[in-house]
Image (tube, rainbow, N blue to C red; front, side, top):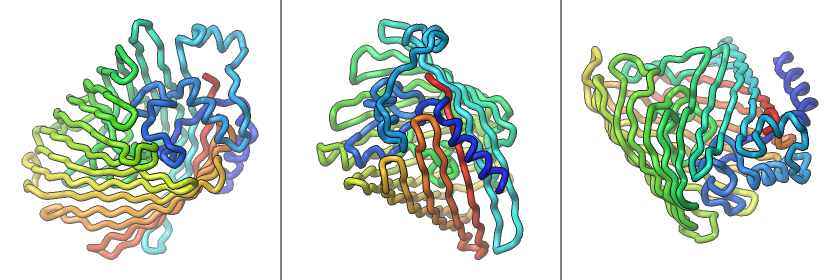
Length: 383
C-alpha cells in the first residue's frame, strides 16, 4: 500500500497537466436530470462538451475558470475543435481477504484513449480503446461465465447521427445503456446483469430526450468477446421522467430481453436518482428471469439485484457515499449476498482525482465474510 500512496501523491502533483473526468450520477443534486447538458453523448459517459468541461473545472478543488488550451499542437490535434480526445491513466490497488485471513492484492494500471470526431451535418464517430495489465472481468459463476478479457480492448466504436437537439441514433460497439450509470462495475446491478467492463455488444440505439423525460431503446448482437454459448442477441430500453420538474427527482424503468444458445433472460428494473442540496440518493432494483439450457445443471430461476447509495457532497470536490447492495438468486443456483460499502472521492482538479473505498460482503448461505479496500488515482491528458 505504501507504493500506492506514493503514486497517488505523484498524480496529485502532476494534476495540472491532465484533463476533465467524467461527471457522475451525483450531478442530480445540482438539478441535472440527465447527462445531455454536459456530455457529448446524451446517454452519458465519455467525453465532456465545452459546458461540461467548465462545470467539471468549477467543481474541482482548484475551482478555476475553464479555458481552452492555446497550445498550437493541441489545436492541431483537435482539428480546431472538430476532434475531442483524451488519454486517461488509472491506477488502483485492491486488497481483499475473507473471514479475517490473509487475502489477495491486485494492482491494476489502465490506460484509456477516448475520441469523438465531428464529421458535420449531425454525424460524429466515437471510440474508446483500453490497455491494461491485470484484467477485472465479472465473477465466474456456474451459470454465467465471464466475458473474455484481453490486454487491449475496444470498448466503443460507434457512428452517431443527431438530426435535432432531442434525438440521436447510433450504431456500433458499446456498453448497453443503464439507469443509474454507476462507475462501479463490481456492483451487483452491473456485474450480474452483464453490464461489466468487457460487455460491449454490437448494437443500434436511440436517444429521445425532452426537458423532463428520456427514452433509450436499443437492439444488440454479440460483440465478439463472449464465450461459446453466451453470444446473446436481444432488445431493450430505458424510460425515465423528471417527476419534480426541477431536475432533482428522476424515476425510470428498464427492460431487456436476450436470447443465447445457453439460455434466455428477461430483465425488468426500476431506478431513481434523487437530489436534496448537498445530499442525494441513487437506487436501482432489477428482477431477471433466466433459463439455462446449455449447462451441466440446467434450470429456470429468478435473480434479483438491489443497489442503494446515499451520498453527501461535503464540498463540491469531495463526496462521501454509503452504499448497500443485495443479491438473491433462486435454485438451482442459489445465492444470497449482502454488501456494504463506504467511499470517499476527491476531484483535485478537473484533470486529477483520487478515491478510497472499503467494501464488506457476507454470503448469507455459507456465512463467509469478505472485505476489500481499494485506493484509486486517475489523471487525464488535455482535450
